[in-house]
Length: 363
Image 1: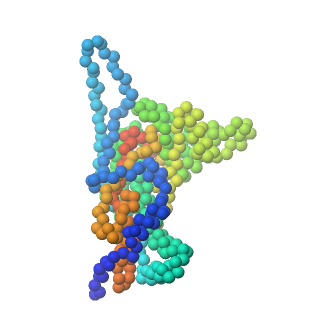
Image 2 (image 1 turned 90 degrees about the vertical axis):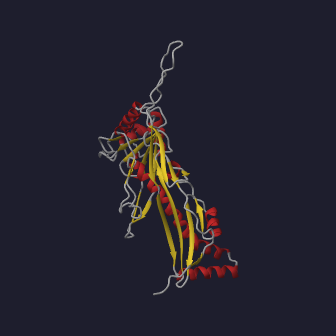
Image 3 (image 1 turned 90 degrees about the horizontal axis):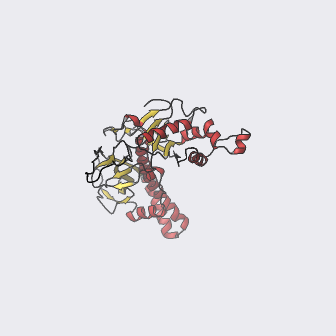
């Protein structure tokens, strides 16, 4: 039996990795805006949320020289969980390495900018792939968690490499979950009435809902809704009954006027491709179908992460919340660019949000 060859270093240097990511920054995704990154010293995450049921409680009238009455503290609730470790890699075979080395020789002799770009693209595409994989997993965990009313299971179907983790379920109150009577996929659904009911419920519990988050598929149903089109249409369109599907921007402007408060529709239009153990790839929006999350603010929580130690700083470096590295083995020649990280989405607003099934199916 042939001996396993030792790791002899890296094909791509740390400086190459850092330089590529500096030259090719990614704009923040909606998931990162709703769940900004927060570093932690622990391998567990936690959230602290005020679970008081009513806000704006008025002071009590007191007489002169009397003591100030003390209100009972309704309490705080901490949710704690384990962080997940996840990663992705891409390999270079002996043939790939041979092509890579030829590009390096060509550039050394010709100093041709076109060859230099080919050289950068050769390993840059792998760096881009592993970075996008990590950011996509972060987006998946964040949106899947909150769009399932802060409840997620790690099973072979949704995460084959993390199915050993315990299911995560936040203590959501009964009043926070409901469903509509008529699916918003039906053009005749009274969407504005459903929104008004949710806003009224929020008022009952001292919540001022300003953001309604849905995925792109269900945003399209909202745009094609008869009631929405009627109120978002211009005067001329209403006169001649020529309503068309308005933009989300036009709908948000209408909602501001209709409810006399700046309520907006926030559309999650990300797509994430995930692979099963059998390498069957499925592409879908990580925010669940048929769900609208009503929140008071656009920032729903944070993505808490804990750094994985760099074993060899000549092969590994950090990009965002995850580690990126490369190693090389010979006989046969083989190289791998990889990324790995540890973290989890934390819904700080779990006790404040309202989770509405807009497909008319109960939770």
